[in-house]
Amino acid sequence: MDFELSDEQSLLKDSVDRFVQDNYSPEARMKLAETDLGYSLEHWKTMAELGWLGMPFSEDVGGFGGNAVETMIMMESMGSGLVLEPFFSTVILGGGLVVEAGSNEQIEAIIPSVIEGNLMLAFAYAEKQSRFNLNDVETTATKSGNEYVLNGHKAVVYHGATADKLIVSARTSGDSRDADGISLFVVDKAAAGLDIQGYRTVDGLRAADVHFDGVKAEALLGEEGKAFPVIEKIVDRAIGALCAEAVGAMAAANEITNEYLKTRKQFGTPIGKFQVLQHRMVDMYMEAEQSKSMSDMVAMKLDLGYDLDTKKAVSATKAQIGKAAKFIGQQSVQLHGGMGMTDEYSIGHYFKRLSTLEMLFGNTDYHLSRYSDLS
Image 1 (spheres, rainbow, N blue to C red):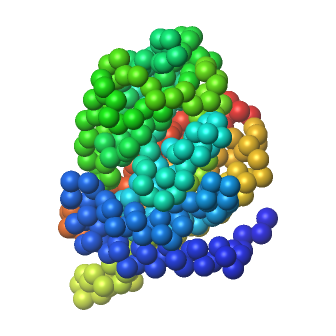
Image 2: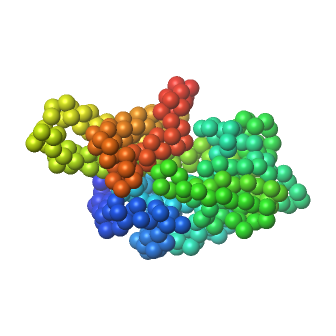
Image 3: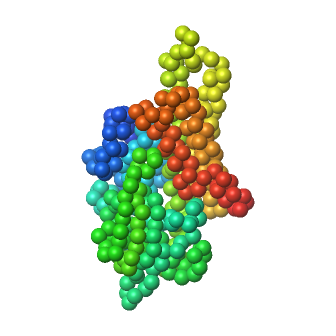
C-alpha cells in the first residue's frame, strides 16, 4: 500500500491544520465549549466555504468526490485540535446515511444544503438498553396511511439539539434485537410530539436525549425493514473517521506531554531526563504510531469496497486504537500530575475526548469480540 499523500491531499491537510492552528488554541476551544451552542457557526460557515462539508459527496450533488482517505486526513487534523463543530454528526453520519439509503430525490433535497452549511443532521440510533448493538431497536414506526408514526426514545444523539433534521432508526417489524425489520426515517426538528433534551457531554461536545410521542416522520429513507446493512456500513465508515480523529488527538497529547516533561523540574532537573519517564513516553509514541498505521490501513480498505475483510479490519483498528487512546490519555494525565486533572489545562480535555472515542460505536472489548465472530 502507498501511504504517501498526493499533492491534493497534502494541500487538504495543510488547510485543515491551518484552520485548527488559527482557531483552536486550548483557550479558544475551552471558551467555545462553554457557549450555549457549543461550537461556532462562523467556523461552520468557513468549513462550507472551504469545501470541507462537501468532501465525501459526489460531484453530481455539488461535492468533491472525496473518499475515506480524504476523510481520514481531515478527521486526524481536527482531532489534533479537538474541533467541536458537528462535521462528524452531519457529514459523516447523517450525510452518509442519506447518500447510501436515500432516493435520488431525497439526496438532491438534502445533501446540497448540507454542503452549503445550511442544514445540519444528526443520527439517532442508540437506546438506553442497546449499548453497542446497532440492531437493538425498540423505537417503533407504525404505518398510518402513507405516513409513519414514531414512538420511543433515543439516547446520546450527538448534536441532536442543534440539528435541523434527525435520521432515526426505528423498528417496523420483528423483535427488538432482530437485524431485519429496522428502517430509517427523516424527522424534522419541529415535528409535533418530538421532545429533545440537549446537554453537554464529558468531552465538551453536545448531545441530546430524544423522545418520540406520535411523531410523524418526514420521509422513509430507503427500503422499509432493510436498513441494518446500510447502518452497519455507514457506522463502519464512521468508525474509520473516529479512529483518525483519535490518532490526531493522541499525537497532540503526546506532544503536549513531552513538552511538559522538558520544562517541569524536580530537584533542579527537568523530569524528562528521568529514564523511567523517557521509557513511558516511548511506549506512548509506539502506541500512537501503531494506531496511525492501522488508521491509514483501514481508510484504504474502506475505499476498496465493503466486505467481510473490511469489517474485520474496522474492528481490529478500533480495538487497537481504543486501547492506545485509553493508555495515552491516562498516561498523559498521570505524567502531568495534579494539574492534568484541571479544566484550565488542555491535557485533561484530550484525556476526556480520547476516553469517549474509545467507547463510541463499541469499545475495545466489543470490537475484539466482533472480530472473533467475523473470523
